[in-house]
Image (cartoon, rainbow, N blue to C red; front, top):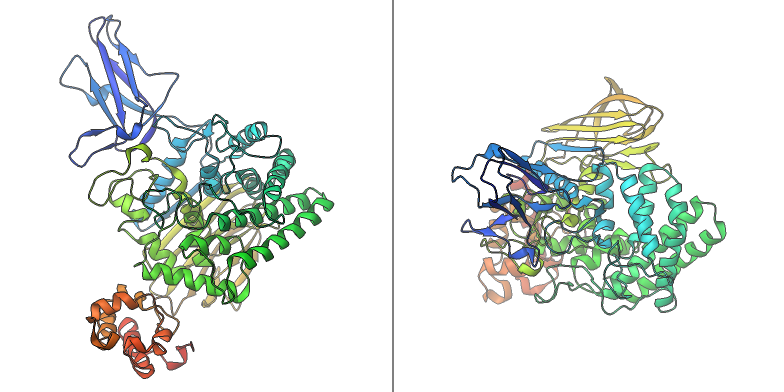
Length: 632
């Protein structure tokens, strides 16, 4: 088919009566080109048709669908198959396409297309995890991490309202939310991040469409879930859970376990805080002031106890994984200097891992957003643009047309991962598209005025990987557009604000020579009513990369000449016991400032300043004034 899709095959055939034709469906071929179905587990994904024998016949199955890219035909009466006799028909719930995201980078465009195809294929009555194997279940965790992306791509209000009513109907009397909706898995287990779909999805729907009815319909369900966790948590705050899904399929844990290394109590308590905060805000919207006061107070208590339990006196977060920093930052559980330190530590960990992620189902959706929000947008872009395993573009460059379940559903050597849990159409990691929409393009809702009655357009413009971006979203009021183009340091930005709405357009802080529809402007923030607007401005430092004492050594890996300079100073590392290239690998997670006060590096403080001066000149074509060098 050329596309991993969900639907059915329509076949035309002329054959004698009783001819048995079998259509077998698969997502991928193995590295030798063989039809691969082991990942289907016990699902057959077969269609069997017995011909009537009275001339040309046309058939397509009615009461099933398959997830597939390839079709193997057996029993067809002619060896010379005509492709015109076979048509792939895509099936998904009837949802209007509302979002668009296009750049001048075809790999990024393919990635976004993969996200959309993954949603289309898995939104067939319920938001399934995968459409092909013997599972096809409405997993709550997948749905909640993807909800922001889902509602940008498609008008999903009716789809999710119906599913949330099912969730409420299947919710246990004590507030426990099943893992999958409809509930077909026996037991009363709970899992943070999964069960929190009860709060996160209704709140997101309200934010996108501004309809309080969804909160009214789901409020008791939301409250019951928060109260369930409250009853399980120590002092109603810290949930010391032992066995849950955790950061599912993260790469940082035991390779024989899918749970990941991020401590489950940290994840569970963070989600408890997040859901409680959502419940408090929902209560306030609905006018339930007593509940609002109670749950805002509980939220503050959870945040305080989270910090006491999961952060150290020096400001580190326990766990030592990327996700252990991502989730507290995403949920605003760290404040001020603690948040800044955590964000820098996350940046450091990614740089030290050569700009590769290790995150799973719960960490990945927030990863790039957290980095961009805390001043590390370049790092987020490098993760997006990374094309070596593990990464989004590794999948794209290996022929993916939907999002994979695992970062290594296909390994770098072309082999497949565990056939028992390897789907090639699993939308969860496609949640990165939400960040593409609201940060790269800059379109986001204003929480204080939901439903795009008021919204923000605040694109983060950087030449890495993309110099042209166009995003549009069909809100209930009309189409919102953000379209920017970067030519060296000159930027044009086109904005469309629908009728009866208002937008805050926020240009980059370093923007200069700003014009709006040809008129010069002094400010960089604008509140605009409906209409089409055209901005021009300069970003003089947009192509500049300034290395400072706070920069991590590993940031030079994209600048070979600068990296060579750094290595040339490492001949005395550990008293000369290590070759410079090995020394660099051991030091790449350190900041330049830390090198100044670490004798084992074999370089002095003044030599570090020399390195900074040289590499800034190499990277930027000119020396950078010493004032840029921050104090450690």
